Image 1: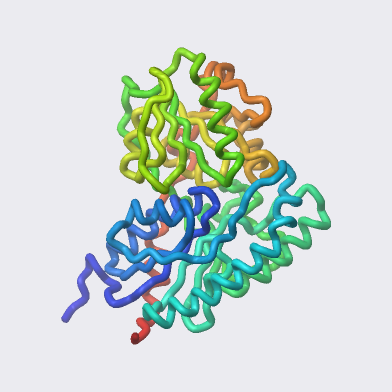
Image 2: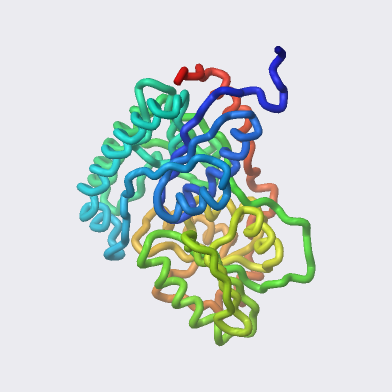
Length: 370
């Protein structure tokens, strides 16, 4: 029987495992998972916490397994201290998810793995890919940065391939972050990923501002409280998307402030299209969504997260977005200034051009007999 051109990869079962660190890692995986399904691949999902909840909301028809949690929290504004304090638990979680991965391979007949920043989700038995833009860690100490990158490269070499969601040029969205400082082979740039897309141009917006919250606690909650308090005194209509994926809740905090716990991709795109401006963290996945929507906005880096601070500063220098530090947020002032920024105009980057590279990888996989 000839192959179905609409479903060219039947009987291939893939394990897809995004990291639970806010919603950025899982949200950028959504277009990849959607393409795998369209190609006829049997997808097994695996994660934990809020990331797992979003996967279940987006793909209720797919098997979604639970992996060990890294349980990352921010105890201070010093990221080095945060990671150092939690490193033993994180290393144990990585080892535990490696054991869990081998068990899933045996029980489900997995023939390939795509991991988004889960360093334990690999196997020597099947082809394993890690999706990451973090090939050059930013640490405010050169010696520590060199050491951290050496450890990172050692972990990345356990995978058959490293897929970077950016363009290969040094002028990519992630700039120096996506270009390793040392020798790292098997790196492939697959282009930007986003579950958001450019909306049909509108002139009458339902909301002046969409506030998209994400990231580990307690910083997510702190930012929400500060922005809510300031929004109540402003003459603008807001919608807050809290990034709380456990249960779906919807209410009004004030006549001008609508609050929803989380949105699926389809719902989020409708809200973004209906909003004039966006306020969000400067995490890489959030920036890719801003590329996808073409919206102007306000970026608030997570305190102490050097990657977000680096990315935000690059965009601020080019007058693409307003950037404010969390301790000095002035939402009214930022909304007055944002109209003078450029934003991404749709020609800077394109999103979701990964299909050929993903199909090429699938073509080389051999189904595993259960």
